[in-house]
Length: 207
Picture 1 (cartoon, rainbow, N blue to C red):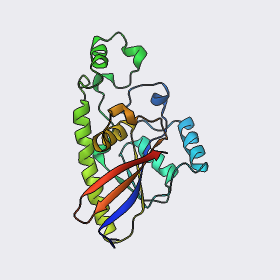
Picture 2 (cartoon, rainbow, N blue to C red):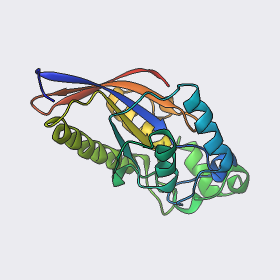
Picture 3 (spheres, one colour):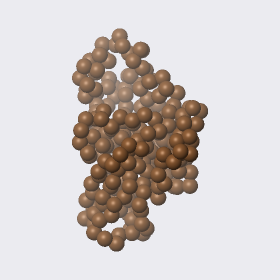
């Protein structure tokens, strides 16, 4: 609850567990793939090691791999979906990996531009970041509403690797790929919420 001019919240950003496509280094965007058995086992092992802080609220992308990860790590906490945090649309590259794309001229063009051009029939990085930040606005609004009734100290967001890169590069600065993490990993941040509904995020450390 609000008892001072600003509130500090620990924000835990977690990339979902591994899927079969992740293991094969395939572009996995809009395909609603579930976690692999190995991916689930790895998450549970991390959880036993105390890798993931407790959370008062959990926000997720609506895709199965994020829902399943949240269920494994935060089974007793109600989740709230942010549709705008769905992974990037990789267009014609969806489901393919480097080996399958290396002779595609469109892929080489995309590589040469450092990934800034839109994926063929998919999203550009700029479009994706804009969408993720729209989701951030919904996330912040939901926190303000919830904190009118109770104290919130820790919040987890179980999302995609791309979502984490989009949000942190936009909010904290640096390059997009500076914030790339493996499945089941992520970042711990400090989120400051002020009474005037302004906010800021400071990156603290890796999970």
